[in-house]
Amino acid sequence: MTESLGTLFSGSNQFFKTHINPILIGALVFGIIIGSMQYVLERKMMHSVQNHMGEIEQMEDLVERMEAGDPTAFEEMMNEMGVSEDGTAEVNTAKSAQIAEGFIKGVMPTFAVFFVIMILVSMTSSVYFLLLVIRNAQSAGSVFSEIQGYIFPMIGLWIWMFLRSFVWIPLLGFVIAIFIGPRLALAPVILLRENKGVLESTRQSYTMSRGYWGKITGNLLVMALCVWVVMMIALVAAGAITAFVPVLGMTIMSVLQYVSMAYGTIFTVRLSDTILQNPLKK
Image (cartoon, rainbow, N blue to C red; front, side, top):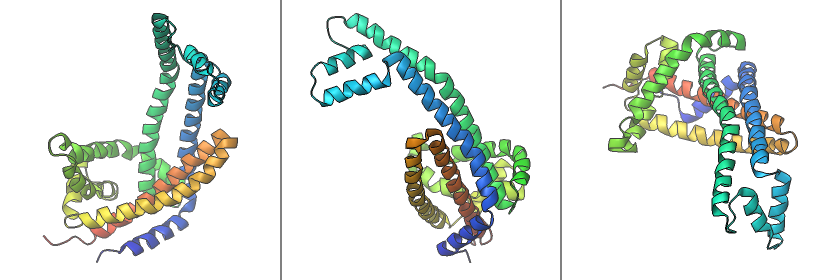
């Protein structure tokens, strides 16, 4: 008999408490990387805005004047942005294009680097927390030492799962993805625990989850909602810190997101295990 929702939550809570050290270490490592990159990207964007659209303080002053009813403030702002309508449309169009081009050139390299790092960290963190739960590891070091050997198989698995779930969307809509996607949730656990291949893990997940679509979907939705509520409360506090120390606040937010990912992974692995151990008869 599969575990109930309450048992899944209690078991996940217990695992979370007993493995809090490696969970926090992983969340800190990944959170610091992403939080720092977010801060750098934000500063780069602010610097680019100042270089191509004027000082932020000047723009804020114009906004305040507009709110106070100053009839000349709006025209001054349009002139700053190169979109005024004073008979020099060609000049203003060229200026607007120059502002946009300069802003994109100033931000895009940093954004591209951030995007690549974010993807890599997302993949690595997913494998880290999966291995942590599946191996029942108490040491972050032992998990980090294993990650490298599973990154590429997991990337292949995620790509194949995406294709299996969403490749038919242009033809049949989201209905296919809704019914297939949840039944592939067991595949990462099968791949890491049983060392199966990408195709075999996906096929076994689909087979073993027969008759469990409702349980998988319902349990994961309830878990996601609970985690979201807790995260919103925590992020409010982190947002207050961001107002005073931006880089610290962003880092705390990122760490909290990875802590929530860790809990979601724990719950998903337990849900996968209870289904794999209790397949329904054909």
